[in-house]
Each structure stands twice: as C-alpha cells, then as structure tokens.
Image (cartoon, rainbow, N blue to C red; front, side, top):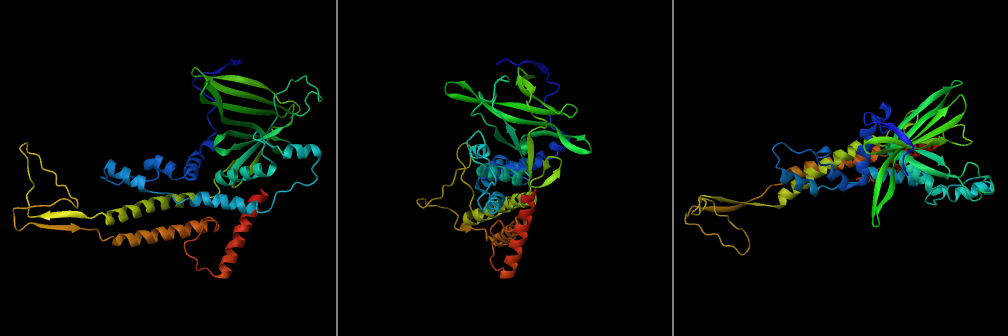
Length: 382
C-alpha cells in the first residue's frame, strides 16, 4: 500500500537511536558476533583478530581461517537459562480465557514457557529484552461477538532493535512515554524471491488523556514516510514491559556476561597464536648451504621441487642440505595461557562454563554453586 503522507526528508530518520541506546551498540555487536560463532568472528577479521606488523595478507587469511572460537559465552547463556527453567513453569489461577492465550502466546504458536525461555535468553544475552502485547488488526466498529477467536499476542523485541525508551513523569512516578524500535519485515519480491525491509514502530503516551498513539515508518525513494498511524483502543499505557538481565537504566540493559565476552575474545586471539605455533612446528623448512641457485636463460631462478619422488643433485661437494624445524617451545607457554583464560571464563560465568581443571574441593564446588544460584535468583526476581 502507499504511505499515508510524507514525513521526513533524508536529513532526519526515525532510525536515529537515543544517545543512551547508541552508547550500548558496541557491546551488542561484540556479544552478537560471539553468539554467532566461529564464522562470525572470522568475518569480522581484524576487529577481533589483529593483523601482526608486516604479516602478509595471505598469511593472515590462513591464520584467521585456522582459528576456531571456543563458545564459552554462548554456553554460559544457555546454561543459565537451563538453570532458571530447571523446573516447569506454572501459571496459577489462570482463567479459561487466560489459558487460551498462554497456550498460544505469540505469532509462532509458542506457549508461555517457550516464550519465557526465549525472552530470558535474550535478556541475559543483551542485558534486557522487551515484551510487546499486540492485537490483530480489526474493524474499530466491530462487536465482541464479531471478534470471537481473536486474541492478543506477545512480541519479543531484542535490545539491538531498541531505538528509544523514554519515561515521562506522572504523579511523581515514571511511565513509559516513548517506545521506538526497528524490525525487519519480509515481503515477496517475485514468485521465488523474498526481500526484507526495515521499518520503525513508535508508541507515544499522552499522560493528560491516557491515550497511546502509534506510527509506523518505512523508507521509500530515500525518504522516510508514515506507513500507518493511529490510536490504541482501550489502552492507557504503552503495552511494553522490560525483562532485565542486567539493568543499567530505564528500560536499558547491558550484556549480563560482558566481562566473559571480552575474555572469550582474548581466548580466541590466544587460540590463534597457539594454532599458528603448532602449524609452524609441524612444517619443517629445507635449508641448502653452499649451493648457488640455478638461473635459466631469462635470468629467473629455477624452482626447486621437494617431494618423495625428487632427487636433488649438486656440483659443489661442500653443499649441505638439512631440515630446519621450529622447536615449538613457545607452544607450552601459549597453551598455559589458553588454560588460564579458560579458568577465568569459568569463574566469570559463575561456573556455567566447564572448568579446564577439576581439582576443586567439595566445599569449593558448593560455594560456587550457591553463588551462581544466588545471582541467577536475583536476575529471576527482576
């Protein structure tokens, strides 16, 4: 459909994040790449694996493609969610109408427990996630009888989607005044091709009238336009609630295990060094002394091919041929650095990441477990 009316020129766009949100973007980017695994870390190139001085691009590429991420960060998040939902989620005193919604809570027909796990995982991952309660589009003049079978549904919004969450003071308390976020909307470009378009949704609360208005922005021909707008019927507040993992502000969270994420990046770098040392140690080099290279008629040096089926002949009786091997003594130091990093990650993750060593006493294990459970309970209480 055509937009309702032009709104913005390219000098301003609704994708502009609030400064407090923008300050968290670099953290979200790091934990997202860690979550997406080895290929995402490799795709980021020098962002997480710096190129050494004078290192040839070809050599760097080979080193990068040999480096594998130890997924400590992802393991910690999934383990934490597993602990928090070790017991089946129960909803008490639910009416039949509530049960209907709880069994089919979102657009993907997930029940409340599956949705809660997804929201919690996102909250631990990014520090906060958001639940928007939405309702299918209906005729404003429709009756309750005509809306039979139409039920509200929840939408999970992740922190990187957030653009603004601003409070407004009312009777000495904060109420959510503006909530703006971005999302990707799929559309069919052709019979066999699907495209994606970014759109921005914004909700605004008028505390004087207790009404909530909304706008949906899309970009067409380099201009942002209003695609849809209106008033939420029967709503006195913006229907969005936060799920905190690590609260740092109003409707804001910072990645709960960010220290672990930074250590995981360091571990990725040390792993690269170790694999490079092992590779160099495993590939000896042929050394030839007392022999002048063979030059062809064009003045180019003839290539010496080394293989089990090749015989090397020399006219100089003093020529010496030997294999030169890297001792690999540095590998022990680098390996110990990897072990130390893994131990630090285990501690930073509340022991949710498997420890390299197992020589902990029963008392130490008990203390670590209780500390882990206490912190997870505090997250649960949020």
